Length: 217
Image (tube, rainbow, N blue to C red; front, side):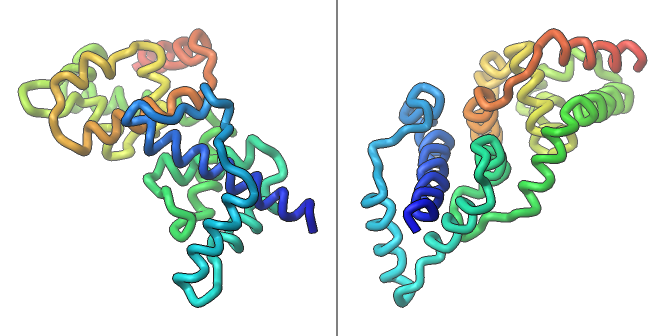
């Protein structure tokens, strides 16, 4: 019984840490990596929250059931992180809305990272040819229009992972952000910045893959 409770708490605490990272870091708040996923919370904090939510639902705690299930399923820390990242990167921040299909899709992308990086680079080339753009011009905003690369990111024509990888390599978001005023762009850029520390990539390898696809055209 204690073991199951610990598993529930581990799932709940991981969620709380990631929730704080993806929502509060916009205000200069919590950084998951700076604090190593730790929070000033314990099992009593969890039980208090479960009880509060249960009182609103006639004694039934959906959150308790959800985190108990997640704790049993995801014994591996990386798998649990993948699950929560699959939700937060799709703007799903509340347990009531968790979608397991998103986890399957996310794990597929991460397990085949280079395949999707190549495919997304081909999408970039397709846009360049259709609109007669150079690769550098993909990152330039024209008047009030979004830069083409941002359009591809917002529309999910290219994945968040590919967009973030490009920013890790090129650091284009800071100058780009200065020219953007719409909330959708700001929210997306915040998401990329919050997500970036979780994306461990080999810059040289990813750059070579992208350059090889661009060269072949």
